[in-house]
Amino acid sequence: MDVKTLSEVIANQGFLIALSILIIFRIDKFMQEIVVAQKEGYRQILENTKEIHNTITNINQQNRSIIPCVLGK
Image 1: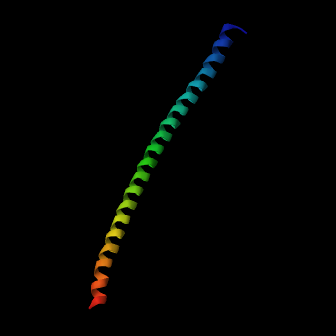
Image 2: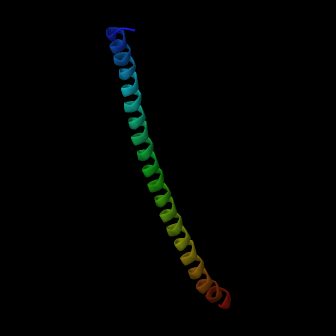
Image 3: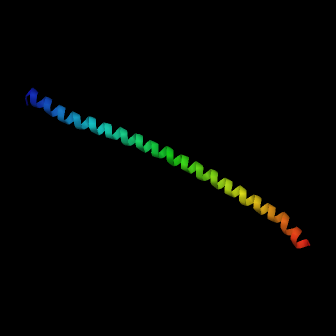
C-alpha cells in the first residue's frame, strides 16, 4: 500500500470517525438536557401534589369543625 492510498483511507475513515464522535457528543448533550427537564418535571409534580394534599387536609379539618356545629343545632 503506497502513501497516497494510505492517506486517502485515513482521511476518509478519519472524517467518519470525527463525524461519529461529534454526533455522539451531541446526543449525549441532548440526553443530559432531557434528564434535567425530567427531574424538573418530577419536582414540579411533587410540589403540586404536596399543595393538593395540604389543601385537602385543610378542607377536611374545616369540615370537622363545621359538621359538629351543624349537627348540634
